[in-house]
Length: 229
Ligand code: C5J
Image 1 (cartoon, protein in one colour):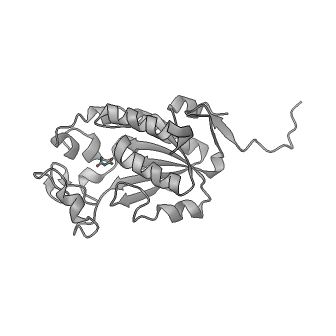
Image 2: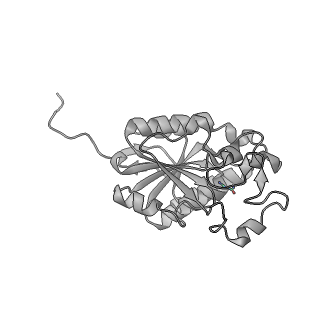
Image 3: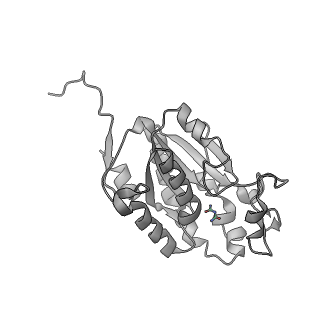
């Protein structure tokens, strides 16, 4: 006979690498990195640089399923967009000058000015767009913590565990995960909810994260996270 006076178990365990990921769902947030049209949709900035955007758009259904799981579980949800102020005051010249000479940050692009806040190309793709109550962070760097209010938003809510998804794995996702790891969060990357224009870089990122006993965190497929008990 079950004892109804007992509280539900707080901690969940998901099969993951390099070891099971143990987390408290009440202190967990999902951070979805840069699922913006310019990186993911055909005809955007990413494809005009010659990238195969289907490598990124292929994960949209999985990110949508992860979002549905997080919302049903009551996790705090954060979305980021890599974007800059229209006057480029938050874009270091070194970042702007390093882009392709024909298409630099702030230049007119196929979906508005490239990586400029509130231009059509910086909008999050429709299938994974934020809903009311979720936090949208405009970040000028690759990492989600640099020059943003993310740290204080997580602190206010008592978050200790971060689940990451989004694009691109080795750039903005990995940078954000490393920033979070240094700040003391236990971080899990959902393998099939992240992608790169360079699949070998994505796979190398998974290996780096899990190396040395999880030096940056854990990785797991969505199915294993959903099956956590
Ligand atoms: C992101 C980039 N979001 N690759 N940006 O990873 O420049």
